Length: 360
Image 1: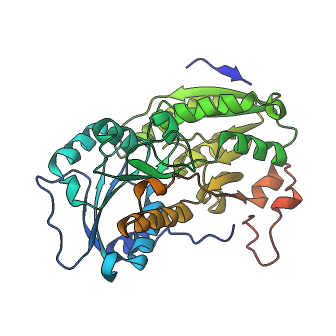
Image 2 (image 1 turned 60 degrees about the horizontal axis):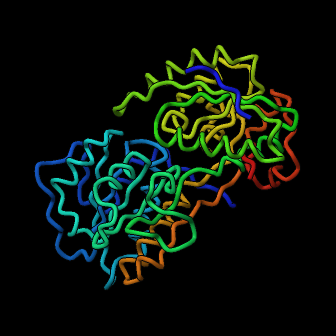
């Protein structure tokens, strides 16, 4: 808790229509708390996919909708539609053990894990079981978790997929291009595993020659488990926003479940006189308080993971499906940029046919 100074294309937003999409797609069933026994496989459907989310909400919802839509569009062997079963762990690893006990995993053609909590849980439960294959998405650092040992090469065991974050070095270079005079960055994060892993990579990035003059002032708040526990973490973070305001040139959203919440962007914007560089696109485009973001598209990543799973269920060798890092893009709110005296670099200027609040 002690402060330490340490050196595309357009998007389609899924907001109000998200719930309708979830119900319209061919879900078998879904449950937050695991049921007493596994569901039966509906007749006439050629492949079964088990989806386990770390929790409800973003970035999982938009990723999952894109994944399901794309895999349903592609279909299963023989042209049949896939069947999906889904669970949410509410960020509690113990729920993963329960799912593992009551579900018959060999009956599924692939298991999709969303988020670092789910990835850690099933790494502990089933890593190395070469008869069961897992596809991950929205995992901050699959290398440090132990799922893989490198990107763009054969997975060492039974996990492959797409990571979540923009590499820290690229976020810092984005800040340098956007705010060349900035030197001190405020980062308030939780003690979630994905945030701690990301911060280690951030420290490594700060050692690079072109970034050594930057300083990151960190503060940590506890992760409060449960579907609504993150609201408590955001309340605790407000004290540190107030403390650091005036001492930092900007705030950086943390790479954890607090950082993706719109309540976090609103809280920082309401208590700080410095700009917030967000984690995603939504908090910039929807005027939630973030001035800019270098982000990975969860929609594009969901579609890409669906392509990977499709290849696998069609008979591709699992070792040939290499883990990937996501592509990323830029979002800038010109109104907030102007308010903070930020001149948008020419490379990020909006095209004539684009919305005034969107910069790619």
